[in-house]
Length: 225
Image (tube, rainbow, N blue to C red; front, side, top):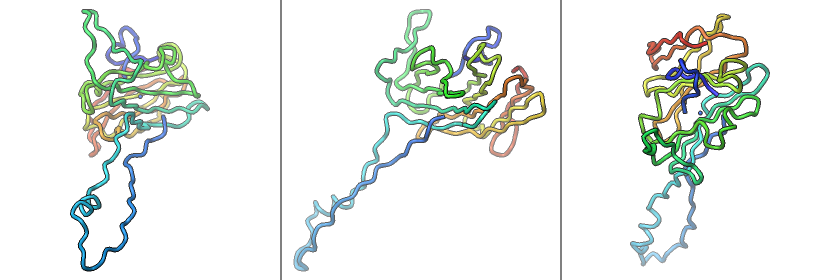
């Protein structure tokens, strides 16, 4: 459950997501033909076959670890999970006017505290949003405070941001003086990115700042708890 910047007045869950990384590329090998007589040249087709590059297999689901560690003695993790096509069993949300949310792909935010997935009560597609392709701007620009209890207002929580492309890292400042830096990670082959930081139980957030790669502050938010 989460308290979002967009719906903080209503204290509603927001935002769109630590799992292991996924390996990319496929290796291929081909048995070399036996030596041909010096008087004969290799057929053109055979030469073309040997020189053609192996095609990389594009995975249908790509998972990128955003952050992981321990908070209040519990393991936590956040990952973004990108489905290139809408998975079987997923139904796009419907707007109040009856239209269906557009999108050809699915972007999920997977968050765990103590081995429990946040918002698991909502089913396998909770905290997922439809996007169009690999660089949909609707897949970025959100920030949320997520937890297992009280809509992210109490207990161990996770601050997760899906920032614009120029954000290199975020810094979460707590009331006890702690400053936590979280580096942005991007899902390979896409424009979808995020950073995540844990907030221990009983701590209050005093500020959330985001910076570019040259340490220039891009945003400063003091409206979190």
